[in-house]
Image (cartoon, rainbow, N blue to C red):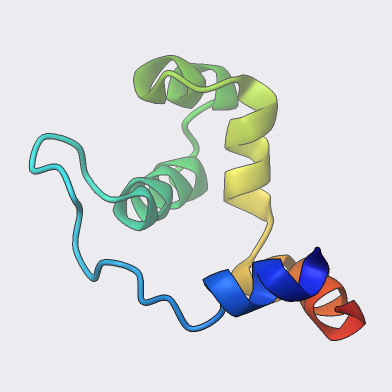
Length: 79
C-alpha cells in the first residue's frame, strides 16, 4: 500500500499560487502571522483574527520549515 501511495503522489506539482482568489495562500497567512507574533501580538488575538486555535497559532509561529521537513523525511525514507 505504501508503494502505491508513493507512486501516485510523489512528483505531483502543487499550484504555485492560491487556487482561490478570495483567501491568501497558507504560506502568506503563516508569514503574516509570524510577523505579527514577533511584533508582540498575543496568540489569543491572532487565533481569533485567523480563525485558528491558540495552540495551532503557537505551532505556526514557533515551528520552522526545517523541523517540519525532518518530521516528513523519515516516513519517506521508510517507504
